[in-house]
Every structure is written in structure tokens, then in C-alpha cells.
Image 1 (cartoon, rainbow, N blue to C red):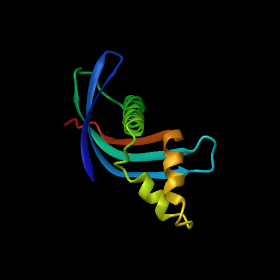
Image 2 (cartoon, helix red, strand yellow; image 1 turned 180 degrees about the horizontal axis):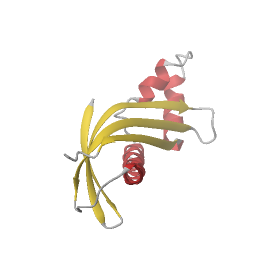
Image 3 (cartoon, rainbow, N blue to C red; image 1 turned 30 degrees about the horizontal axis):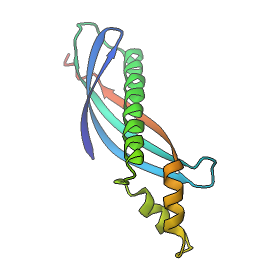
Length: 135
């Protein structure tokens, strides 16, 4: 499990959340046109800091979750696009692709042709389970 501190602005108010990112998984859809790698992240967290004295209810928590999901989705897509443009694969997509294909002679060459054309999709699910407020 990895921890991350994320700050989001929503309606002029800054919200800082401590997230425990418990799972990240991916699926490669090589037969799609263009090929797609779906990357999914699940996280749980606690709202740590808010620069307002307003009470935060479940509706506000939902809005904060959605704003942070959109922000993290953008970060993930930017990172995946950057490594793809630089023709590197630090996440092991190519290793997974070649390990799950039967044709030993051409699977690496097939991956090298496929990777530059891959389109990435990211989905992020954040569940804030506390406002961190002491009553």
C-alpha cells in the first residue's frame, strides 16, 4: 500500500487528503483499434486539512472525491503518455504482454509495433471514509 497526499481546490476552498492507494491494475486490449491499456486505481483516504471552518457533510465529501478522482486520472494519463512518448515501459506492460502470448518468435516485435499506438484509459476510485474532524 502506498500513501499520497493530494490537495484539491473546489469552489475556492483547498482540501488536502491523505490517500492509501491499495491497488493499481491494468488490462491490455491489443485487439482494439487503436489498442488500449486500461489502468485502474483504487484508494481510500481521510480528509486532513481544509482552509475553511464550514462543516463537511457526505455531499461535500462526494464532490471532493470526484474532484480528486479527476485530478489523479489526469496525472496518471500524463505520466503514461510521457513514458510512452519516450519509448520506455517502467510499468512492465510489455513484459506482461509477452508473458501472456503464445507465439514466442514474434510477440516481442508485435509489442514494439503495438506500444507506440496504444491509447491509455485511466479510472480512479477514491473513497473518503472520514473528514478527520474531531468532535
